[in-house]
Image (tube, rainbow, N blue to C red; front, side, top):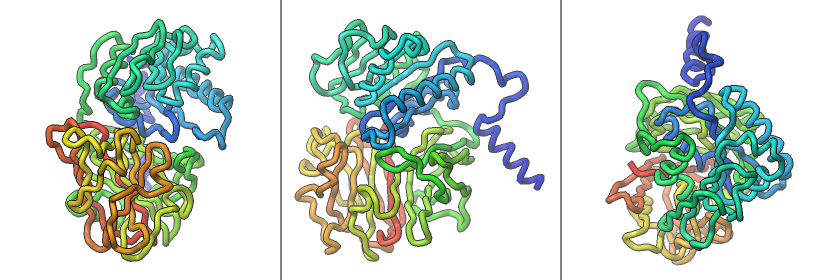
Length: 433
């Protein structure tokens, strides 16, 4: 019992849930930051920027994402706004700050412009607003000082009376996650340039926490057993028979904190049932992270439920919060599965803004056919589907050469588990280095 209490205390301290005496009510050095995603998005799109913020002295417990169902089948706009009111009040009380800083992307900018204009009381609680590649406006919404960052597309888009920054070589989601955008909004929030735009590794143990959410509604995947394993990056095999942590997701899908190592590779296994497990793999986190999102779905439902399954092939969902460009030649991306290039002009054109890739053996014929993308995946925003046969049994190596990386290569290797009982998701970093 004593050992358990000591372990629990260490975990709470690591996660920042407890503060030393006299510091519980200390004013935070920076205002709280809230990110509002766009269509089919989640808090995971701000994960990289949150780690950049903490690399520059921000408190991780004051960086949050405001998530909602962008189809508005599970919530109304008014409910989204009321929940944001409560979030802002909670963060102001926790930080003792005068106001919060607010960022929104795409559809989220439509919502936040409406929110800030809805009442002077709401606008008065926001110090700065950042409009990321979203809706233009004749003036700053609600009179709040505004920074607008625009990616590829019409150079006519702007917000009147705001600072408008254009990054024409960056795609729609890339604008959210890039270091150039970070440098702009950090200076906008603080009045000075960031010390670094990199994600600096923490020394010692880190803490990981987040939510398991049903894609794309962002409803919590509640009551699911989560097992976390450290894996060998060379093979994807678990280093130990027993998990390093076991949790049951909360009503909103929340889990954590989980102690981890900054340089380790981890598998997050959502055990829906003894015959249905969703395995999710990430590159090393480097820093404590409160925005880890396990995008999942109930077995047989959603887009993953449309992937054909079997005992002899592996199904993969590969994602990155930066678009995959398969039609730009040397200026694009390379993505190889077991050495075979799978990106091309048909399944990942720049104009499609592909973020998520569903790769499986269409027709269960043990043949790879990349001549055209698979529907209905390709017809969904930011998605594509590929007919890729990956046999079970041996490790599956997925290698990315990101554009602009001077030949840098990122690799994730995972076990070759049969799709009849196992879903496999791989999330690559959206940043270089």
